[in-house]
Length: 354
Image 1 (cartoon, rainbow, N blue to C red):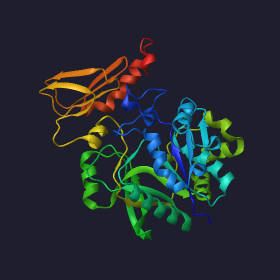
Image 2: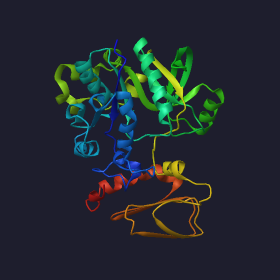
Image 3: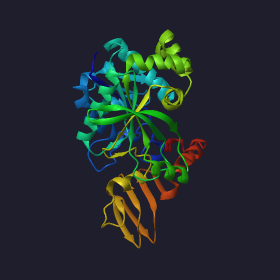
Image 4: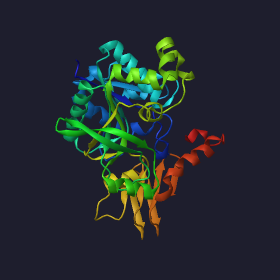
């Protein structure tokens, strides 16, 4: 049985909550947000190459709108390993199509891992160790393995996974059957989850054998997998738009979780920058030339180093200056950036800002 991991990067997201820096043709995964010179997509590829054994076994699935940008960001990626969606249909379709293509090339025992392009990982060695464990579990068992991040605070912005019976240890890491998936809870529920010690954050990273996931998709998401098997990717725009969590993970009895700790953030909005880069002796996070008076808890970003941001008497705000747009928002309301984009989209004067 093949124990090589075939990593797939899910690179079709828009990253709207990082607007105005993230735009249609320059989505979040093309940005460097952690202070390094590498984009999130490049950083994801960097850490997966060791697991893949080189570029020949690393795959990317993305949208037609940004496929050329992916090629420019990852010039060593073989063209045959780049799958281009004609229209985004969420992660269930992406997983189904990619798994079919990998099965054709490697066989149904190929172990596939799916990884969002826009995550930040702190400890590469621990990450590789964890994926080795997940690969071992997927190789030996008919399992759909998800990586569960051990919670560090009662987040209301992540989905949760409840672990059930322990099924053994793999590469010295314990693995558990999944009892249930729970979407983003309220604060009280999240605190209850943490108090039990039985819940992990849903990282959106999955590992399984091609044949196992395809059979489970036929059982639980036939409306997605059967058209792809019968008609190929030309049917893509007509597929239902569903997440892999909703289409499969919440229904399958083959879900297992590895609770892991390797320093993780899904970089969901501008507040993530503070989690990554905040220094105790600095009142603000500054990725810009900033002159401030009585300003604390601010996140300040400017894409042009010649721009100067001046603030007086501000607390807990995000200020982003990119080209012809300036965004100013309270940190607690950054999730509402998506609502602003809908307003801009409806007005012809502003569609060029998207």
